[in-house]
Image (cartoon, rainbow, N blue to C red; front, side, top):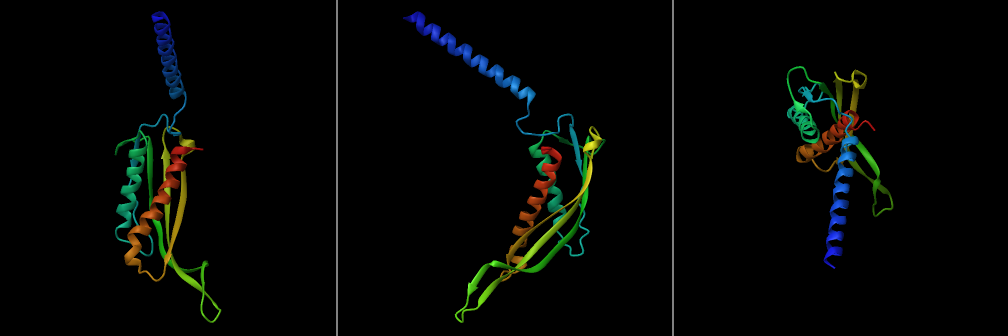
Amino acid sequence: MNFNIKNISLKQSLLTAMLFALLGVLNSCYSFTGSSLTDEKTVQINEFPNNAPLVNPALSQQFSTAIQNRFLQRTTLKGTKENPDILIEGEITDYSITPTTISSNTQTNPSGGVIQQAQNKLTITVKVHYENKIHPDASFDRTYSDEAAFNSDVSLSQIEDQQVKLVTDRIINKIFNDIVANW
């Protein structure tokens, strides 16, 4: 009976070792992060100046820091200021707040008429220059834009930080996916 227990234990150990070997082979063949950046080791992300007609004074620093953090925390790239494999730079070209009416948020007033809920829309546009020195054919110049609507009853100063973070996060996601994911 001891022989069978030892035999089962040996089989389990062998099976476990084979499983770990298979995972090691799969990991070397495929990146589970989905990153297309395999040969690139360094990145330089320059500050994105705010050249929009309407200037949010904190936007340039917030956007620049957020995009740097995204690439340095979610990739294996190391930041550098000299001869980077990847260069990311650009500018904020638009920051606007425009009135809009959303018809899906309607109310019926006592006289039977329909009242539409007035909203404002924050739009941010960023022009990006991406240069990949290892794979030059992957380089591009693109413009990214996103927006967020908010109730016009609320003053911009009350919700601006939250809305700016929401919109810049969406833009950074688009930039990151275009550079790293390569779907």
